[in-house]
Length: 109
Image (tube, rainbow, N blue to C red; front, side, top):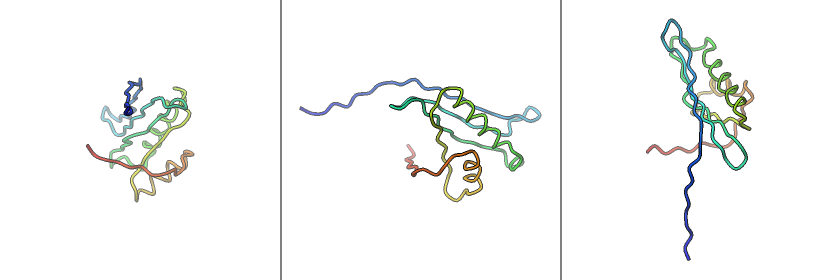
């Protein structure tokens, strides 16, 4: 007898967090929350700040809001990714208590 792969849908929540200045969006980010076998996990994705507004704390505020959203939702961890060579971004995450943990592998579809 062969093995059977089964598929189950899961419920997840996604939140888009943004900052506007003079009615124009200058920063945004996404946090997705989903269950695994240990509880709820949050995944921080696509943090972006307009170039003219960088180094002014807007990205930090997006990350703070995302972490709070994950805490409020009962997540036991939050995962953030960043590309190699962006040490200034890595330092921001480390200042929030994130630690380097493993590698991310990606395949564009």
